[in-house]
Image 1 (cartoon, helix red, strand yellow):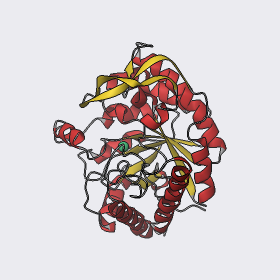
Image 2: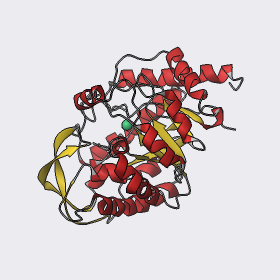
Image 3: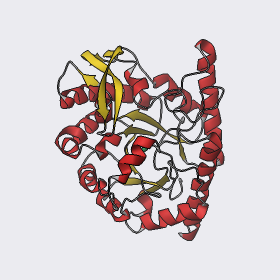
Length: 343
Ligand code: ZN
């Protein structure tokens, strides 16, 4: 019987320095060929061990096999030209040179299915596998073919669904779509974003989740957060839409943020993955810090639906900081479990 307040994480974890340079987004691989394939698997074994030792109940592969949570998936698809880039604004926040959609997008072969099968076989814990969400994928590209963010999103949603069905067949327990773009384009989320997400998750036999956050602790995001005022009410627009959707779990940012905690009450009927670990700070939370966040969330979410989690991916942190934050997450959840008489 699984216990109350099962802990999990948003997704990514730092990679070992022998696999990729630390503290770097989009870090290049240090190995190649068969050595790289073996190195990725060894890195997955290590992050699983750290999560298990920290008392994390629903574990991930820490995205050890990917350079980037969106781009590594898109690189495997037809219809996107990575050689000739165009400049676009990402989430209205910063400019980036991005690949160009030059024709119909298509998935000719599985992308992460082997990785999911390896993860499933490497631990006895429940496992979660993460994929980018369709709107966030659209937001990282220049579209010279569909000329419609909605049409491109639905094309990606069909591709994601085919991939997710094969991943689910490996026996993973949860598939999560990462949609940080849901925190920016509210009209599009309402008009087609949630529908595209539901298309991506259509018919999956496992639990489905969406992760919506305020991003890594990179400078562009820190500057953006300064413009959001004293209360961050972005979730107020998306949560009622998600509450009516087919998606079962919502992973959100909470710790050390200006998100009013009562907004999570808008997710009635959903499992709520409450961010109790700040990924934008090197300060390691105490178990009591984590417990305080969980207790605050429990005023708005039934204990049966609450999953203590991280705010976002931990890939920008050092390995040691990330490992200690996972330990704090597990210990903080255990404190509250004991208070509830459910230890
Ligand atoms: Zn995130």
